[in-house]
Amino acid sequence: MDCSHVFKFKVNRLIVVFALFLAFFSVTSPAFAQVDSAVVAPDSVALTAPAHAEQHGTSHGKEKFEPTKVIMEHIADSHMWHLWGHTSLPLPVIVYTPAGLDVFSSGHFHHGEHDYASSKYTYRLVEDKVKIVGADGQVDEALSAQLLDFSITKNVAAMFVAIAVILIVFISVASAYKKRVGKAPKGLQSFIEPIILFVRDDIAKPNIGHKYEKFMPYLLTVFFFIWINNMLGLVPIFPGGANVTGNIALTFVLAIGTLLIVNLNGNKYYWKHILLPDVPWWLYPIMIPVELIGVISKPFALMIRLFANITAGHIIVLSLISLIFIFETLAMAPVSIAFVLFMDVLELLVAFLQAFIFTLLTALFIGMAVEEHHH
Image 1 (cartoon, rainbow, N blue to C red):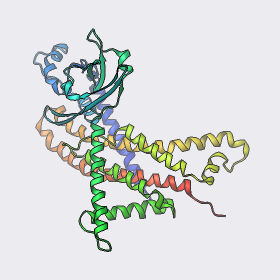
Image 2 (cartoon, rainbow, N blue to C red; image 1 turned 60 degrees about the vertical axis):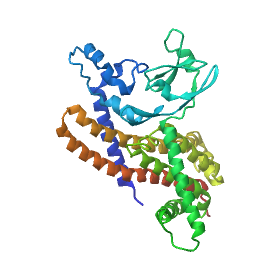
Image 3 (tube, helix red, strand yellow; image 1 turned 180 degrees about the horizontal axis):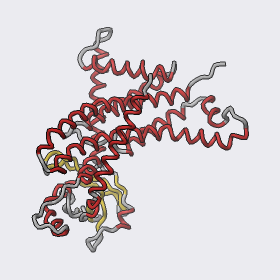
Image 4 (cartoon, rainbow, N blue to C red; image 1 turned 45 degrees about the vertical axis):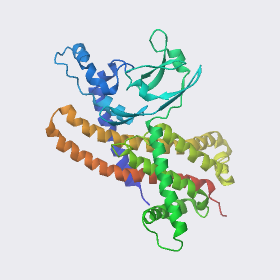
């Protein structure tokens, strides 16, 4: 299957996105010279408008809209799950400090406006990172550097939601197969079965060969996990709106999973090609490092591709919405909303496409590792 046109489209899309991003960055670079978010929450920007107005020499107290700041806040992870207006769902904060484990609700921070004093330390939310506050009321950087944050953030909670959806769907489909043995699929079963067959017949079999069955559980898990998280990320309200697959930490773990499965199942021909390639011996000092770098670069490419494309999609949509506030006119709204709707429809395709590409390339790498050489 020739996917070259798809990749060209993705490259062009990324160029446009980063061009927009750089344009916003150049226009709004003063955004990074704002007051410390330790005492000012993102949702309480209006309270600080007069101070900013004085700082910039304006008297009407109107704060300039900062698209870069708004976009980065929306695609970043958070200790709270925003619902609507000033209402947010507090999430558990789990930190391991030099004094031991501390567990409390992020609601105690009141959107970053207040510090929270536990029996061990006083904590403050600075740019959505938990810091330890010293006796002088300032952030103790030395102690904060020793703090390990295991909190259930917005992305982690959204990931749990996606896992719950996957479990509900597949447990119900599995029970339907048990009850309807030999019968045609019905309901949710009839929707999921063609997708499973697609992964098996168009991804696993052509790329892995007769050993495909061993890897089907992993391929199906990766495909549905990425796809469902991508789809939930397009829903603007709870329980959606989290940028899960646009978080490089998650794509890194998925890539590590592929790296381990590929190399742990690699046969002697795979390792011979890497460690003893069929080239003159004097080329070994060049070829062996190149092949070993290739082992790492394949899953690295998977990680960056998924992260960059999903994040790019969110940045485009938020950038188009920001145009209304940048131009400060409702006349821009119809144009902006029309483009947003178009991008959202396109993102539905991209959500499936990215899950497909990640699974396809994973199957391809596995197939290269388990392929038998026939003489």
